[in-house]
Length: 387
Image 1 (tube, rainbow, N blue to C red):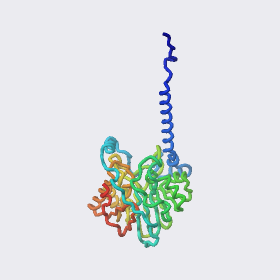
Image 2: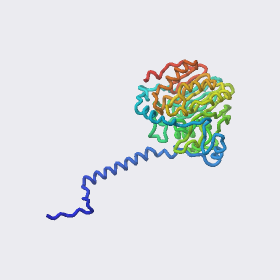
Image 3: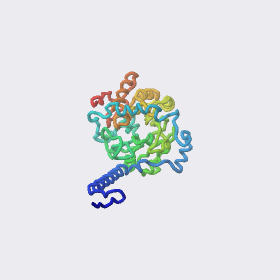
């Protein structure tokens, strides 16, 4: 019996195998298309590193050494030897990182009252680090992030636990927009682009951050860049960048833009905004130089055993508030995005307990709730009903 020899030692693929191969190829192409769609906005969201005159100014900063901005004290972003514990907390910790119910959001029926007394100091917390400060008849928007995710991609990354209380186009006329640093949960491309069109207020930012804004179409005359301790006067208010203990970067290159806290001063009222920071002795120096403060907006969330140098735990936020000579403490940077392994209510539970123990005045507003600093609402533990 004669048989045909196999060519090259392999038999021709069957029709079924060819169909399977075509199907797998089609799936692979579809996967690539979905991936490309998911990250199509990433290149623009990465922003731009400082160049030209901006880069020259960065290099002249006392904070810029050996090609990068440096903290006032030695700071490691992640403590060596804590990676395993961090992974265990993330995977096996079992903490409830999302509320069991809907976070109550106060949706204003109209813009904040235009008839508020000129001396009244008001704060509206919109969620995470975003807040509106009403000071001596002026309105300052802090670290606005209105996107559904804090990520370079609009389709991937940490997603909101609650909606934004008010659309950007329903905000009142702003006098200034303040950015603490360029991380995605503080500086959002889509929000900046919307504010570029819908508002005329200048953006006040730490050194180097203006390069991102220019890439996103903000005209240079609306960008005010400051180094630590530098001051600018806008709409009758003084804005000063103060030190913080953190880092920066939106891609693989880090610390080419500056981070900072902010002092916002009118003739009679004064507010401190912490941005992101680990605790450091500089808070007492800021308090002595710029304080006392009628209100402090303090970062209390997104901490972990690996990050003690770059994010305060709630008890440290209380200590920093006292160092700053603050009166009313309003917590921010919690309850909106899941960015750390702790339970979502842990920051505010710990903060409230420490505030009572140390006699610190505290307001814990719901997202969208307006706090009159001289007459804050009592803390009612609204978050505890959500688990």
